[in-house]
Length: 300
Image 1 (cartoon, one colour):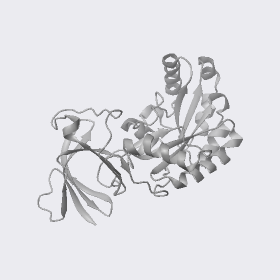
Image 2: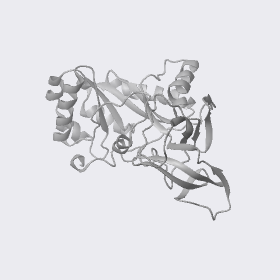
Image 3: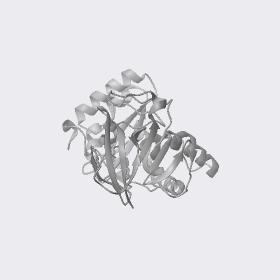
Image 4: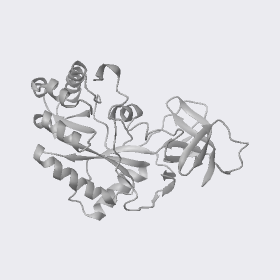
């Protein structure tokens, strides 16, 4: 089916831009300031603010959950907020648990109504070149590193960790449990010195990953932006309730505003906070090249 999303107010880094999108086979064919000369069916979106479908991290989904608990988290923590892809994180105690834990997580996420990526979390003490290589085999693009003191960071043989990432530079994300500001400063210095791909801080759970984070991990440009060639994943907010001016720079408060509608791969999954939950509609997403948009000093 081919149709036009007409006069959509799309939220960008520079503010809000009104534009029109031609949709064909559940994909954005192209974007223009106006598509008045096209004869396809048009959906007038002038009263709505559009954002991309969000990618959000989650640490609570695990294989011990009953389906009802799994569904509750999906609906209330993710889908009602406009999430169309979740970065689900598996907590690992030892390397030997990795294969089994990831397999169980994939089995759990078979029921996911939205797309998903799988990351892992491990204590810094257990982070080894062997663990990195195991993650590469399983196509894990993200590792959350738990630590609570500077000495742990300083004694780690980071050059070995970096060498193990050759050809698949997994993104490391700090997960400090001590004095955050001091530990994160030390983390940034070490990452810069050893030229590794990393986020400067741990993203907030159940909140949208920022575009720069998506770029670093490698999720962008597949997700995180409404653009030509992207899937039809977007959120719609009622402009009148947001009290926004289209010609001004806009800041959307995700914690206090839920989308009126959410569309995932061309299908409505959220209508005025009524969630259309279809188990198995989501798919696992793999990242061919993690950190494809990392800054120059971290390239191998």
